[in-house]
Structures are given as C-alpha cells and as structure tokens.
Length: 203
Image (cartoon, rainbow, N blue to C red):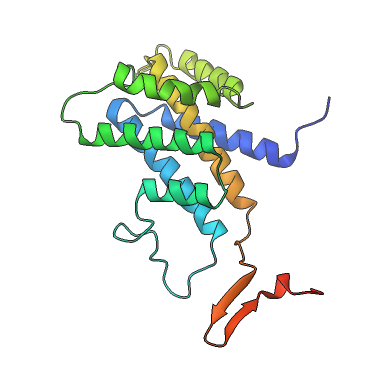
C-alpha cells in the first residue's frame, strides 16, 4: 500500500482543522460562516488564475464585477476552474446562505426547503475520499466533549453541512495553490494584435 504524499497529508490536516473549527458554530452562524469560507476560497482560486492587477486589487470589491458570490461562481465555471456539478453545488450553497441571512425567523438546515436542495450536494461530496475520515473525526470530537461544558448536540443536517463546507474549502484552496495565471495566446494593443511570448513559434 502506497504511503500518502506530503501534499495529501497537508490537505487532510487542513480539512481536520476546518471541520473542528466549524463544529463551534450552530444554526444561522454555521450557515453564514460556512458560506463565507467557501466564498473566500473561491475568490482565492480566481485570483490565482487571473493576471495580477496593475494597481490595488479592486475587482472583488462589493460594488465591482466580481463582488458577489454568484459572479465568482459563474466566472470560475467559464474559466474551466470548476465543473458543472460543483457549479450547481456552489449556487445551492449561495441560495441557502442568502435565505438564512435574510430570514427573520429561526431557521434550520433540517427544514425541507434547505435540506432537499442540499441533499444532492451531500450525495456528490460523499464520493470524496475525505468524507468518511472527517465524519469519524467529528464523531470522536463529540464523544470527547461528553460531560464537558461544550454542547455535544449536533443535528445530522448540520454535520453533513460541515463536511460539505470542509471538503469544498480544502479542495478550492488546494486547486488555487496549483494554478498559475492564465495567459491568452494573443493580446491587443494600439500597434495591433500580438502573440504572447510563451505561445510564439519557437518559444
């Protein structure tokens, strides 16, 4: 049996840290924090793929073209950085996050209006090799908290949500670390159209 690579071990440890941090959140806070973490990881992914700005980074500010979660999802998909299934999952997370953010009543991930859209995301995420070991880590942590001042109650819907968020954040971050800025084969200036140096014949 082959030994895990250093990169695989790093990803697994990062996933463990995120999952345990997410366990401290409950209800609306868990949904909003989870959505924010995925949004931030997606922003980092896009920044890794785009050429660096010529000045201060403003493209991702709230009032700019990539200032929204939805716009970032769309661009990541159009650039081929995420596949169709992940695009749909991210939009589902975005809608659930928005519903919790704008709701004045107490809401729960176990409610059908939230659980049913997320169920397909969970089904897809369970194919990830980190799902089962992370689930065991959460179970072990809950058992270790028994008898302490920390509440050990965690509904299944919240646990699935934590696992989903953890896997998305870890792999978005891992992908961004492997990216180099995308470079167009040609660029235009006042002198006309020129080929980039890395695509020029003989380069």
